[in-house]
Image 1 (cartoon, helix red, strand yellow):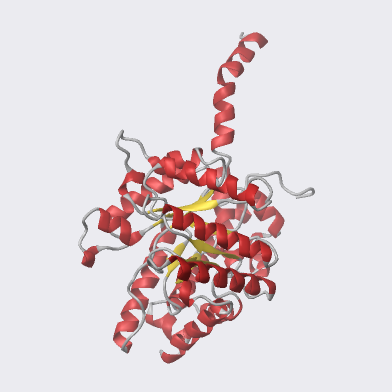
Image 2 (cartoon, rainbow, N blue to C red; image 1 turned 60 degrees about the vertical axis):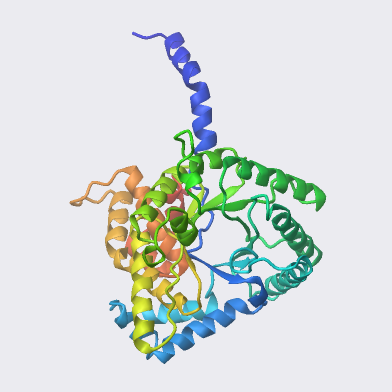
Length: 416
């Protein structure tokens, strides 16, 4: 038989690997992930933008006969969907909003961008103060390539300064670093965050950021590495999410404009690499956008809604739970498709989780990892508004706290 010393020797041998696994792959921390990000060019942003988009989305649906008619148009027949989506568009139409100072804004004189930064920060502060801001809000500043680096950092610095002066940083502040081409740029962004925290008297590690994956250099490095995976582990826990950039990435590969799409094989390859990179790290991931907008005559609008609904469903089925929207009318199919995804699978998932938790004999023998996935799926549906807490507890016979513990692989609440 092996002695205690033998066991201790093996533990000692693997101690460094154990620590690295725990540090590098801590798992989901339970923070909310928005189902969508809307971005709007800075010169168009105002404090009421989120509610404005909600009203415009409902108006677009009304022009087509109402949300129920749009649901039928895109092939969704669940009668519960339209009232849920209408309520969402009235109460929380945008979950994540990015005020754009990059591609959507373009290159402008410094005094013009400075003025827009200050105005936008004040408008953000106003929307936070009056309760009209989305749960997540922030800016996309210019990239860290040499020609735009200083301008991007200045915009970020001014934006933070004005927010702080206007009442402080919102809890859901989100900063987007676009067009990253190297792990060194992520290291530099960590340095910028540290300097900004010091300059503005912020708590250490208050600032995090998401990385837009829009260049092939992040998917395949010159040495055969995957920099998208490396950058997560050199960022000192500050990278919150990786976001796929549909059009910059496609164009950088020489794909003709007509065929640039979220579902191009090249896009799927990049996103597969990103999905592997974030697995187990606690870093979120988002799909990109479609630039086919539901605007124009009835047939054009219908075709755009069908496309958008299908693309949303497609990335959800592939385990990517967030995407970007470019126009208010896209919110209609964003929530119809998202809510349908969670409601269509609700009964089966709730039954399997109930059987697992309460040890009820069934034709499916789920393991703990699958139970976690079931709980996470149901939890996402609950948080975004696709299902209600009453529906969830009735179907699973567990409360929300137990569901969350299962999803995070945590000890169940006492007495459960």
